[in-house]
Length: 275
Image 1 (cartoon, one colour):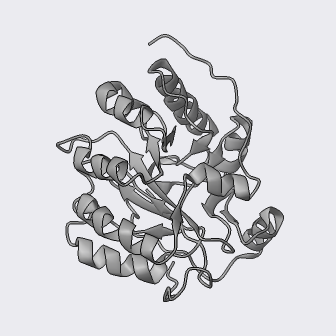
Image 2 (cartoon, rainbow, N blue to C red; image 1 turned 30 degrees about the vertical axis):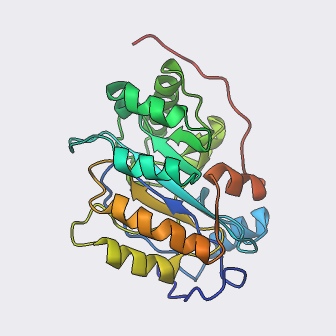
């Protein structure tokens, strides 16, 4: 999957917004922090959405810094890890009633329909797109991007899920063609501004919690993993959720942050083909 603000969070109402994103697949750059300096293009994109929301190469990286909402999201990628799902993590989120966004790959969904059902039946979870076969998105290959979006969406719909029009590109890849293809497919590409690097066995829960307190702000999107790829994710989330709530943050789905920024696309018709 996909620079660092060493901002100390003293009070959420004076801190910038941050969203948590969790991924079930391994990332080549899973410890990512937002960079203070914006390129001219990034500055134009951010000005267009307003409210201190930010786009990077057309991808949504954070919501409004003026509120207290943050988003916890998990990428659910095809994986050879055992187990292929994180039932302990998901059970905690359900018990604590933590809204979360799960970016689900089509291949994973086909292989794990019972686990997908757990996500579908939880009213405060939302399911979004993470491609079909979780292939890298290469520059100069718009058709491959389109196939990942359409294939993943069709797989989820066939399994009875109705994903939000949000697309987390596999590995956080953002080639120049991504924004245009996403507009054509009526989806919003979503990255993050705080990646805690949970696939790395050297990133203990304590280390990731420390970094979260340094990086998380209002409007942030945090990325983690929702299966065996997240080495200490369940322990981290059990510690982090109550700590961030105590600081006044409110967990919301990624779609809520995008809607506040007037970025949510209309749902597009889904073309379902036989497999």
